[in-house]
Length: 171
Image (cartoon, rainbow, N blue to C red; front, side, top):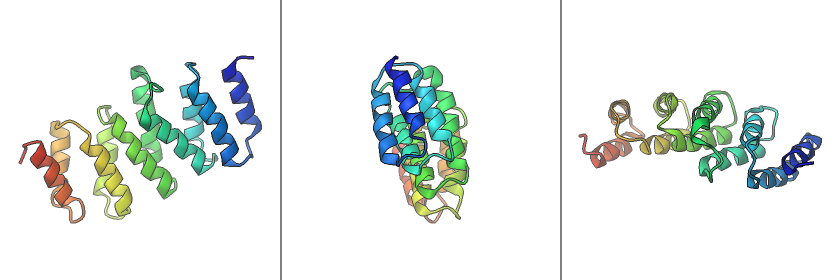
């Protein structure tokens, strides 16, 4: 049996196991070079029944890159991460999703997802700031500049937004 199949089978057998046991298998899985690894990790990440620690681990792997996400896969990965940010997931999971989206700011749909969170005064400052730090990684596109100008009047993120606009020389 190939390494990928062995690890996926072992992971599946541990469906109700402690997260640490599953994380060990995911770490091994992320090290092998097989085109089926990314779809499997995305399935794990999207599974709301999966342990939070496991889902966060996958988000961090996607955020840190390491060649895991091919250019052709970036839009799908960004959409799935955006879904986690937008759904009723736990605060920690949403925070990691906001940070992970920083790797995908050039993908269509990512800036609007981050914008919604940045502008949502009912969200925690931690989540709003995480979304803002991902937004900072965008290029000074008209869409991003317009959002930062809108944020420049925000009581919480205004100073940071004005600072980025100034650094981009768009005052």
